[in-house]
Image 1 (cartoon, rainbow, N blue to C red):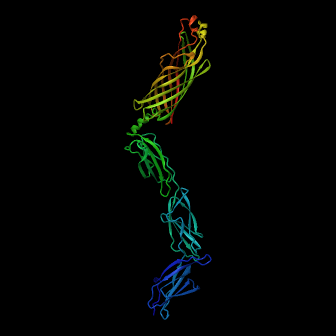
Image 2 (cartoon, helix red, strand yellow):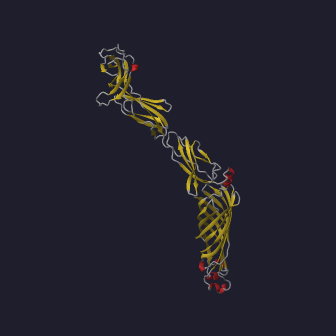
Image 3 (cartoon, one colour):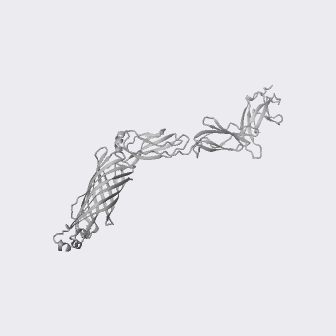
Amino acid sequence: MLRFLSLVLFFTFSFGSVHVKASETYRRLVNFEWEPIEEAKYYEIEIRKKSKSSKISTFKTETPEWSGKLSVGRYEFRLRSLDKRKVPGDWSGYAELDVLLEAVKPKSPLAGEQVKATDPEKQEVQFEWQETPGASGYTIEILNSLNEVIATEKVSSPKFSKTLNTAAEYTWKVKAISADGLESEANEVSKFSVIGPKLDKTKIEKPDNEFVREVKWSAVDKAENYEVIVGKYNPQIKKWQKFKEFENLKETSLNFESDWPGGQYKLNIKSKALARESSDFASVSFPVRTGNRTPAAEYVQTMRKSIDRVDGWFAHASWYASSIALKTRFRDTLSFGTNAVTGTGRLGVGLLKSDSPWGFQFIMDAGGYIFENKVYNFFGTEVSAVYRQNSSDRAEVRYLTGLFLREFPALWTTSTSTILNTLTPNNVDRNYTKGGVIGVHGGIEYWYSITPKIGFQANAHLYLPMTETELPNGGKYSGTDFNYSLGVLGSYRYSSRLTGLMGVNLREENFTYSDNSDPTGWSTGVLAGRSSTNVKTSISGIYINLIAEYSF
């Protein structure tokens, strides 16, 4: 008697796919294998759908294996062996067989894919997979990085959308479902991440001065750490070089070590976070003092800010206003005296550098005098070299020297008017015109810082006219007059760029020159032997002085 086949454990199965037209029933290739039975010449296999009314299909094979095409569904089958006389043995018991759908093949997102989000918080993700033949629907399951199910959905088409948190990792899997409710074989699992949009750039606080001990920057929303690259400029090769690099700083500040050398530095900072696109680099460059950068050294430097406020080009604007006294001794015969209201505006530019004691300034002025209800305009220019010398932690002395051009009011009269008013000299005709001289000047200024914003200045300037640019009646400059200006001013630093000064100046100006008009008339009659060609004009007054300086 042949042994009967009773244990399903003796069987192995495998499945393959068979491509059919859309109008045909989807079938899968099924392969059976079992252990051979002694003296068996043939084998019979009965297969039927798992239903008592279903049709039984019987197959014969001479080998312990069988392959055929079955539609998706639940089956049961049994086997028996036959000897060479075709005498059958007993049937095995029925065993169950599920012919499943093929495993679903994902299309998007694929394993390892990074989905780029447009919103920093949420992102709608589109899931797609290949259509599975014979499937009437699908079940999709989405899990978070903790392997927790966050979504399970049944759908009829091979696509699905779900809004997920940004900057996180996920796993998704999908199963195909047949009309009988059978699910597909073990499906492929795809792990992907939703990458947040590019982080914002941080804003770096540029150090206020060269005493850099710490550099700070603003915290960026969603950023977890920062990549910081410290660059230093090499003046020998005229290039920036990497000095230090910090890859994952969680703080929003960087200690600037005391042993780092002085020079020009550049800080480049990138915001970073897991599963988010890093920001572009934010950058700022700044000078760092060589040597002592302690708070004590900074305090001394800070106290000088009200006077040492400019480092580079600056603009100068000022206004002088006064009631001056004008006196003229004309040809040693007459003396004129009058008072006038005057105002002078000045504009200029200059250059002062922190790394050099030398600088310069160029100033042009335009002023007006009111004589006998009439306005007369005059112009001037000064070009000065400036040398600065520290006299203490809070004070410095500035020396100035250069050239100047000055126009001034010149009064004159005629010999005829002088003779006619011999007894009443105050009634002679007065003619107002202008004279002009060029000369050299020098000055000294003492600057003292009271606080970082408030300062004090005292100054003295000497002007020595050398020659004329124009004089009335063909006159020539002939004097060695020393003109001077003495002043005191208070200063206030409104901002790092703007400083205002206000004070008073005492000015005394003298101009000696010749008058070559009417030589005959000035040597005849009552003027014979009394007149010369000498003229001296003096201008004195106390001026209110307002100054504004703006650094670029």
